[in-house]
Image (cartoon, rainbow, N blue to C red; front, side, top):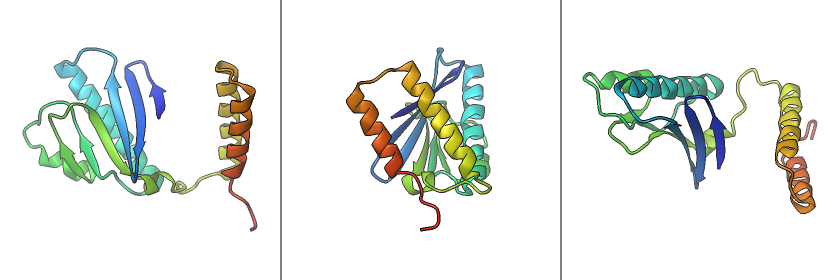
Length: 147
């Protein structure tokens, strides 16, 4: 599970088999205005995914009730959109999450990945065993160049 926090709420990434559920949760009680803001948050997330990997989600689930003219949502998001669900969810194929974005910069990725890893270690010290395990697994997952 991965969690991304914002001032308004958080994204939680849940992996199960061939599917990845990206769940948006708001920090406050739902209102008409927050439903609209949540819809914008989810739509922006979907748009970012589409731009990065040139593939859309399998489905979007929205916690608020269906608006009139709901067919437009599916056309704009490029997938089936369901309303009245328990949570706001963007459902993706796991394979889509492993695609490199067009225009990806591998050197920048490595630099930022290492920077983030160092910050995580600094923020949450772990045991020696956990640090060694993470170090080895991160090196095993690195792409090899020229092989």
